[in-house]
Length: 172
Image 1: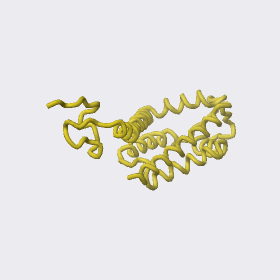
Image 2 (image 1 turned 45 degrees about the vertical axis):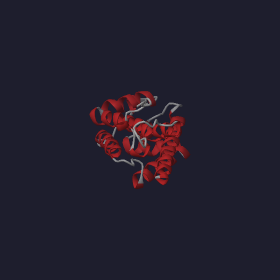
Image 3 (image 1 turned 120 degrees about the vertical axis):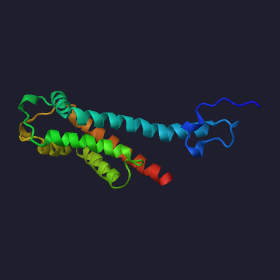
């Protein structure tokens, strides 16, 4: 009996992509579907997990680094007392979000998409709102020139992730 070589172990392939019999090889459409869905989601989950763990473990260092990178005058910024604990809660939120299977589905996905839309459409106002929540003196803080365009790009990415996630839900 000749067994064709497999690219994946059978246990790594979701049931819907498993060959009908042990001698059947996986075709390129099945490989593409496997890598397009589960692998893409796994990579995104890994990235969000890393971000979440870092935010939970060292939120102050994250905020200090972000201020140094994004503000022209980081020494003038005065954080509100609850900003660092909220950064930690945000990290916990990322970790809880990725534990779900459809992690940008339902209400969470819609909220993520709304925030992304706001950042994409009105990045300056989005940033001003965020600064007013996190800092006692948002009017004294000057952001570097690259911050507004990057805020827009991150908003577009958030919006695209939400749309792709919702589209994947409709396909199931």
